[in-house]
Amino acid sequence: MSRLVVAVVGNRLRGDDAAGPLVADALRAADLPIRIVEADTDPLAILDAWRPDDTVFLVDAVRSGSPPGTIHQFAPHDGAIPPERPGGSTHGFGLAAVVELAGVLGRLPRELVILGIEGAGFEPGAEPHPAVRQAAASVADRIAAAAAAAER
Amino acid sequence: MSAETVTASRPGTRRIVVNPLARVEGEGELHLTIRGNRVTEATFKVVEPPRLFEAILRGRHFTEVPDITARICGICPVAYQMGAVQALERLGNLTVDPQVRRLRRLLYCGEWIESHVLHIYMLHAPDFLGYQDAIRMAADHPAEVQRGLRLKQIGNDVVRVIGGREVHPVNVRVGGFYRVPTVAELQRLVEPLAWARDAALETVRWVADFEFPDFEQDLPQVALVHPAEYPMNEGRLGSTRGLDIPVSEYDTHFTEEHVERSTALHSVGPRREPYIVGPLARYTLNYARLPDAARTAARAAGLGQTCHNPFQSIIVRAVETVAACDEALRLIAEYEPPAEPAVPAPPVAGTGAGCTEAPRGICYHRYRVDARGTVLDAKIVPPTSQNQKGIERDLHRFAETALDLPHDELVWKCEQVVRNYDPCISCSTHFLKVHLHREEDRG
Image (cartoon, rainbow over all chains, first blue to last red; front, side, top):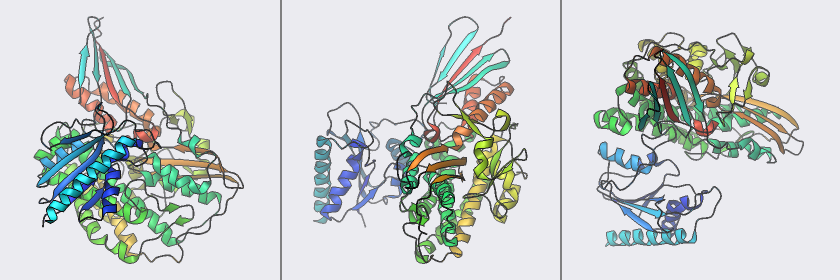
């Protein structure tokens, strides 16, 4: 059976990097039929988040120079997600690399929507920017609407 | 090789920059200068700001230490927790419940599995098979990469069940754990770990077929040694030069020194000699304590009872992954929940030292605490900072044997020399860019 899965990446203790976890928090509070996977700072962990016939929303903070809170949407194959670091590192792989790896291994879900929330600051201990909080709520609403539509 | 620019500032001189080097953590620079058939410089220039964890710990209560040190590293946090609690429990003269000791070793097995497997499959294997990265490799070797990903996840699962979560676990405390798992929780790990042990054996066979340059280190290897078990959480400090001391004497034999090119302190051993820590040192000094399955796999892979070729570290990591899976299964079979998850840990004034085997080698901790339990002073020596001088020496010696290689291959191999150590630069600080300077000696 197809499920709606939300996988989020981000560090709650580093300012706007908490964008993904904030979306997860809002969806948990709404108690919807959604599988929520929080991958902290190890995007490789999201590979096991979904099954092939799932619909998946993948949410992470991004930094592109846009105003904080801007919501970006990417498709897995559009090449628009720049790799954070070519080849991965001792400590793991970025989101772009993990999505590419999932594609190479035939492990992409039926539908994958990648949502990036523009952050302004990623300092340890900082609070998320108000616009990032607002964007996270907006993304959560959008996913909740998708869940409601799937229920009908 | 990641990216490269070649500039010629004057005839006969070549300056090559590779930036950044992929498949290691962090940022810094590697400089290699070649004049004729001699390497005249092989240095790391670590430019990352220091992270000052030792200073952060000052003034904190000693019970907070394992949760703070867990934040030093995302892939080997258990090492930083284990070194901290060992040091502070020795200071307090605490003896933890034997089942708590088992659980801690099991937690460490999980970390070894996830850390070793990530490096073997996703970072190091592409070097041997000629791929830019694991994604390119996965297109041609999907079954192997899938096996590696599942293996790593099982290591993560062990850390999550005992440590509370996969990254920066939260369940370790001075005196024991905050909560211990039930027998049923650990039993659910048995079937995956049995699969993992077989997959680890497959891994040994896979990497044993790679081609390894004929190259040996000439530096002393230093590791924990233990009379009864392959060392993780405890032991004495031993070396291939006959060192045999308790951990409490670490500071009288090993010193850290600042060098201008690195924001990570370099370590030197007795007589200011560089030394090597990590899988090769552990293996060489503790071969007899490996589980039978791991020893058999090592022999079948062509390893002897010692290993000094850093390129073969990938085989040793695979052998240690077999050992970690085998040991995890044994520990789970023997587990009964202790009566209490922790023994009381009142503050004791004094200094305590601890040292455990992080996946990348010995990790030393020393804390001075006052009677109220406030940390007055902390010293943490990560394995990668201890290996910096050895990496430089390997680079120097290896490059001199490989100067006839085509340029691209030489640069690739030099990068590999660094990756042989699975450097955890965020622990020691960070690096790495490669700068290769070749000055043609036409005189």
